[in-house]
Length: 170
Image (cartoon, rainbow, N blue to C red):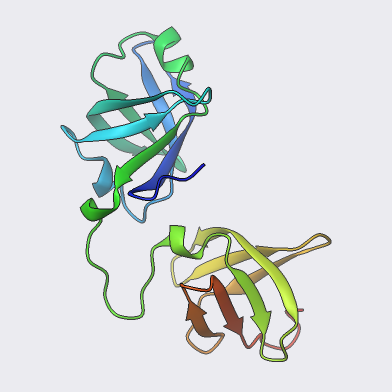
């Protein structure tokens, strides 16, 4: 279930320590969307939604640690594992031309210049030089570098991407 006016920016994947701290997988390019004092919508795995205020956030070995006001015990944090984190779309920063939010790309159908269907973008890997799109179909996974020479067209409205893969990638 997606909320039209909100955007998924992360998921709670675990707990850290005994003071109510959660581990999150952020879907945002930076942790700036998780600034202290901001209220975000937390959709728990059972579907219940509640607004929670962020106390603090910091990076932590491939994930991030987050603390919410009112969550002070490990058992409270454990109850949030699996919850999804949302912010209103209007609070997202403006993008430069020809750049896209990851949430716009996830789920997009990917085709070659010969119109061969490669699969859908399942996730995006951030590397030092360029992002890599993880494209999955029923049988295989293809890693596509997010380079201008490879990604020829992105149609957000039709959720479709066209790529010109370097030899040996398919």
